[in-house]
Length: 137
Image (tube, rainbow, N blue to C red; front, side, top):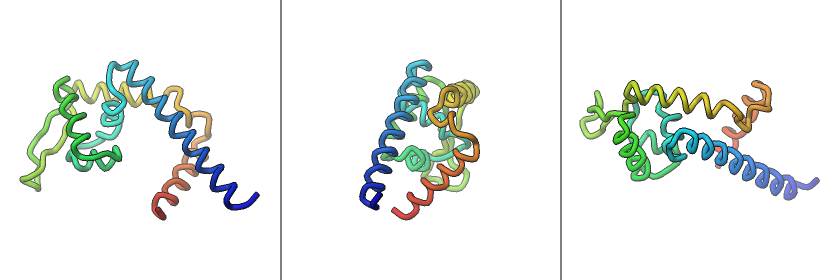
């Protein structure tokens, strides 16, 4: 098999996996009564961070992350606090209800995950390969 065929196959497989993962996030979002972006934001809010940091984690524009954060704040799932070292920034902190919803999201994302059929070492190997490819891009 030539490198062009391998490249095409890898691209097709990665695209298929991305669609499968996206479908899983959408199902979790529907179950939780949230949007897929809100579920992703909850997943990524593992510690207090800024909206800009969240946008980077979500691979979206800062304005999109701000919109998602506004909706989560309206639901009482997070608060914005002054950043301890940057007067210009706000730190995003989950409320008690937000922490509870995050735990629910993490559980639902883990249940039936498309990656669940892989052993832990295979999941780590896949992650490491994707990191290596992302670093080269």
